[in-house]
Length: 172
Length: 147
Image (cartoon, rainbow over all chains, first blue to last red; front, side, top):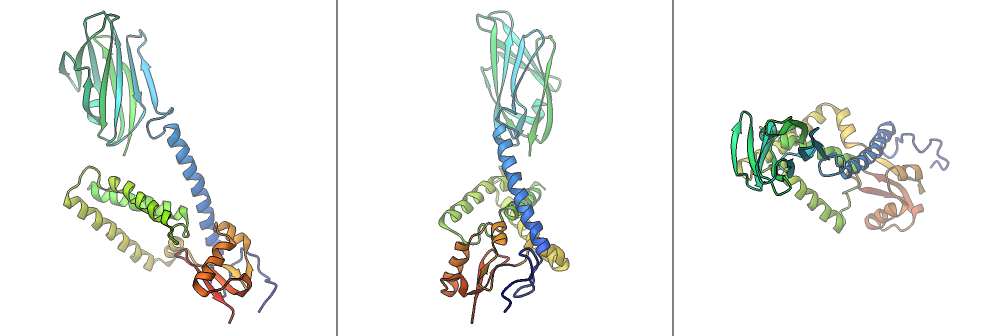
């Protein structure tokens, strides 16, 4: 029996089993970097890279401030989320919201709140009429279920005014 | 089509995650490990099936998983280097009654784990009675005592 091992700890042994320490060290290195990777993934998830978090929540408003949209930059296929459209116009009148672009291709609208006075098709998108309150404000909430994968660009406008644009990414 | 893609993606993701976790992670199942395993299964189930709970989908997903498993084992048989990369090899942890601390550290083990294996497998209570302790590919520690 050899008492003082001539080999270092990280050298391959041949007895009692044949080792491949070069490979084993690579495996250990992979485990270590994998652990860092998992930590990074958790941190990014907490940050909102995969929907619902500071990185994901966003809003855009038009230059004249008449339309403001709160949306999620990142969504996941099959999950539902809320898109909020704030409109400002004349008090107690029907405001016309135009939603165009790829929203209807990437999402199923599960619920609209409040129910629009009327709705009509408008090319690829829809037009919705909502009654504004005494201050001329109207908030339209769309409960959307993601049904697609990839990037979807949507435009929202009040009446014939300038459209604001935002894009959302749906993970598989 | 998406049944196959889902199953393949989940197979790949689980394989990578369990490689990161290391061979030891679920080799010795504690009660909590068992619960954890069930929760992982639960979380996987939705992604595997999507919103399609039909019998056909279940059969397709299971068939794909088994097909990938068989395919992988055939590939491993053909390319032994891949088998070595995926399955790893045994690692000596105790040599002639002496611990190899650097190896233990990298394998995320300590002397207690080795002694536990020694007690349960060989009835050995002391380190110096151990000729070799080897961390096997399946994550179990085998202990070879002195004659």
